[in-house]
Image 1 (cartoon, rainbow, N blue to C red):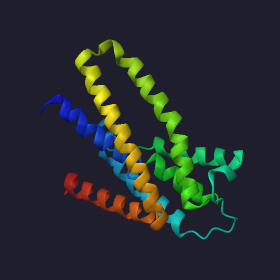
Image 2: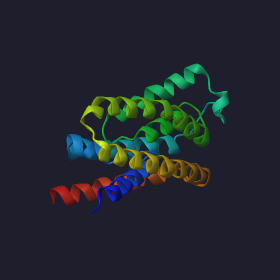
Image 3: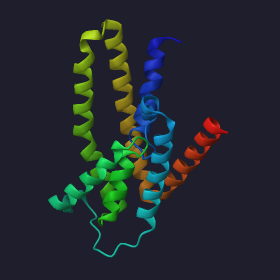
Image 4: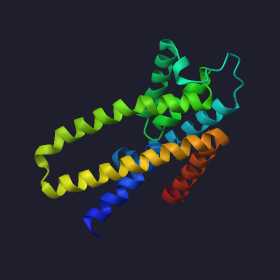
Length: 188
């Protein structure tokens, strides 16, 4: 398959999976399936719990109404994504809901918080390997990045629309199904 088509496909996959709480699949390649499967399951239960839990505090309905302390607490939840398979957006949205944000405010903040992190990580990774890349590699990188950005933007818009009409639990159940299918495929 043409390497530019591969860059296009990988850009689409990354653009979708990085922006919704299903966890991008790149983690599985790096560290193996068991921690990822466990991360999928624990993350799923965390998201379902955040949806089912009764909130006793006043709901924060806008990113503009978040306090610095609430932002810090959501940032602490983001650290859960260090566990491969957990999902950065799932951790921050569920965490935001647990501290009293509406689903929409938590999702908005999750995506705002992601932008600087993703930019820094991309630049850092590029600077680490730039000396190894030739022109063809740079073209593939540019295609993948552009496609991932466009698909990610569309995915965020659709995801926020969906969250206004549904719940985070559906992503939790999806993750449980993926984890069960991975166990069946890999171990049975």
